[in-house]
Amino acid sequence: MKRKYFAYPYILWMVLFIAVPMLFILYYAVNVNGEWTLTKAWATLSDAGRWRILWLSVKMAFETTLICLVLGYPIAYILSNMNKTVAGFLSVLFFVPMWMNFVLRTYAWQAILEYFLPNLLGMKNGTLTGTEASVLMVLVYNFIPFMIMPLYNTLSKLDKSLLEAARDLGANSLITFVRVVLPLSVPGIVSGITMVFIPAITAFTVPALIGNGKYHLYGNEIELAFKTLSGQGDFAVGSTLSLILLLCVLISTLIMNHVDKDQQQGGQMW
Image (cartoon, rainbow, N blue to C red):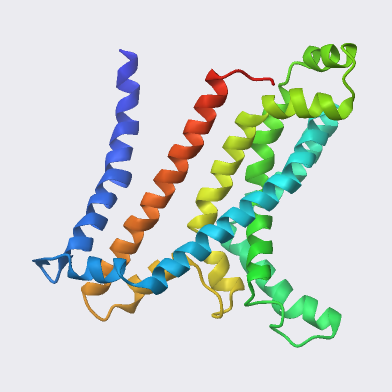
């Protein structure tokens, strides 16, 4: 059997669960009550309020990614310099929460922020939910393992002889990190940014539960458009919003791929 035959199930999966749903989204964006029209799509594109929500979502995703990178890089770097057995055990502790359902973890944080911490601090219930800070904190909690994992894999595979050579040439720890470790870890950084930014910009569970009805992002706007169900036209609005979000995801993915490609072709060390 030729190897290409093994790709057929994957191709079939992509067609059924990626291509076909995309075609349905495109269909509903331009078809309202059986009539082909761009009226709803154009009205959605002209709504400045929804563009503000999209910008807020991009901003929130950027902040989430930045915080995950700032917190995750030192953790991954420390783990990569530990004994393999100890590092493996500690890394499992970081990834154990991922074994629990994403929605359940978010519900747990909702209970902590809405009831437990306010009661502990003598505050009114719900004081800590419904804010940008609380949504951002839970997003970081949920997505930081996706930043640590690729960074740890990259840093743990660095050639230690390069670090020894830098020290032999008189470089101190800071210069060695800046001019050797950091450039060589760029592929892990790019992978981590991609794995955090894309799900963060599409998130709707965390804003829905932690936002407590007072704070929502673009994913919640899409959900509301489909759930209103006051007519077929709502599917046109939801589909148009989905296409805009899909375009944002594709652009961010292309940018990350371009950065990663440049890094691989342009040399690895300064």
